[in-house]
Image (cartoon, rainbow, N blue to C red):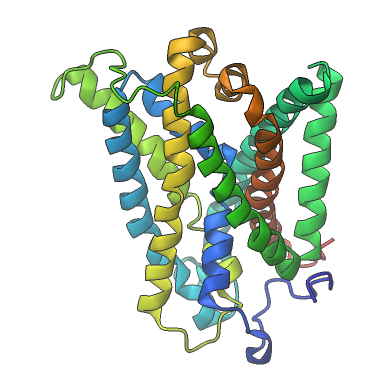
Length: 329
């Protein structure tokens, strides 16, 4: 049952309980980045001065390269039945992997924080438009707290509840992103020139490489955590199919990346002050059509839950691999 408390920690999952499918794995990995937090990262090519088409090229290149680098990290789980931090002990030793575990902990906390921040801001902004909720520090603190506690509860309950959340959130968020493209269609101008960076110039390459690396960081950040979910796959899962599934999951995240890219073009034209502050969420609320308030509120809630749970669940496992006496709770 999805609401059953997960009893497994970092010990190998028994073969009899490895009944997840590749489609389950795809939904969790895809859901982990199918969010407003990813749209925030998609804003950076425009913030760095690229045109829309230059930014689109950077986003596609970053996601593709990152997905290919990431893919082999999925194959350890079915082989070992445990997460990647423990599996890496075969290469680095128990002590040697602790540095990597703490780096992974910081990475997961960073993406969890981005998720809570972007979803909380969007929820408060959308609620302000719908019911006149004032955007006070108390309102933001309450939104962040609710998201953080909800994500924490799902992560503590474990894999099955997280899978259920992603089954709902990943497709719903995708639909809401498509609704967003439709809502913003009249304001979007694909000929946006950015800072008019000439292709091949030093300024272009510095901005293009920086934007590509920001985008690439998203799939790369999953490297330590793919084993958290693939350990529930049967031991005989083919490595080639598993890696292909991982690549597809990351390529699907181009949807929020392009949404962030396209809406940042609108923000740059209509609310440049938000762009100067690198405040994507505030800018999105400022330029969003009134009819997008409800979809934005739903998108903030669903995408925040899917991204936050995948980050925090992995953090818990990685932390327990360093301090194995700690229980999940």
